[in-house]
Image 1 (cartoon, one colour):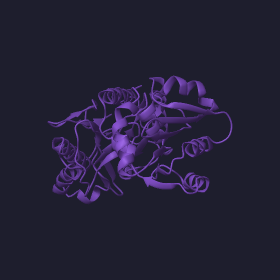
Image 2 (cartoon, helix red, strand yellow):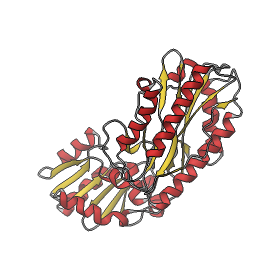
Image 3 (cartoon, helix red, strand yellow):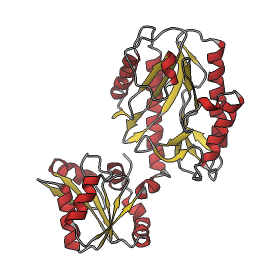
Image 4 (cartoon, rainbow, N blue to C red):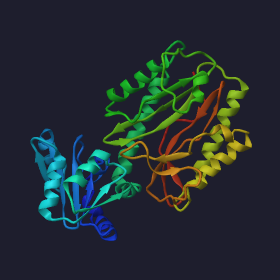
Length: 361
């Protein structure tokens, strides 16, 4: 666990309220609430004013919130909706202008606020807390490093046990089981194991299809440890591969290494993406690269920034991102190689320790 951060961001949150002429901000996104308070449960709201913060949860989390939540007054509702408790506080405090997370709140949530608070101005704000989360604290980086190391250890232990005839789904299940056995909270996303022609599907779901010799296999996996996600992709082979498959593999590897070499504070996200595409275009594979080059990772598996075409966000020291170019050839197969890297002022620190030479089993 990393320490609560509400005090660290109190001044910026107050500025956001002033800039938007708001009396308070309502947070309903659990990752954002966890980031600011440390709460790890499944039901909570947070009301932030210029003076204080109030945390709302239900009776299941009375003890847990007392142990985890810091720097906010805790209100535990024993029955009924915690949203009603929040609305009651807003009325009692006579707040007039209220911001809410438009990218997290559902329509029903918004309608309840609107109908229950007549005369109060509502303003949707998107990505306010997510922007605070973009640059990781030293404690967060340490947590991410632990998650990355666990993920890599699970991969290497699992891959060595793969044999022809094992199913994609069976391999994925074994990976996720090993994550839990080694202390992970859960998989960060549904583990991808895609073999043969199915490796040309970037987000293929594992099937009962048996693994065969002499074909490409993409394994994309991540684990949650102490709340923080990791993400890694490796492409492996059972038996030997033909020259075409090897050519595609080493083209993607060169693209990934070229993109990593560009990463540093001050570089625009699109420049990293452009470098990966430049290399793949050299090998005639640019059109086979059908997704962005990477994304941020933290409390969630996909965070800001996005490293894609047209993304002008400047990288900052302390960002943790993936670099994951791929090439997908329908009817043949695909290759993706993914590492997590920490952006620094002078370049980047590759966090993923797993080797990137072609794994041939």
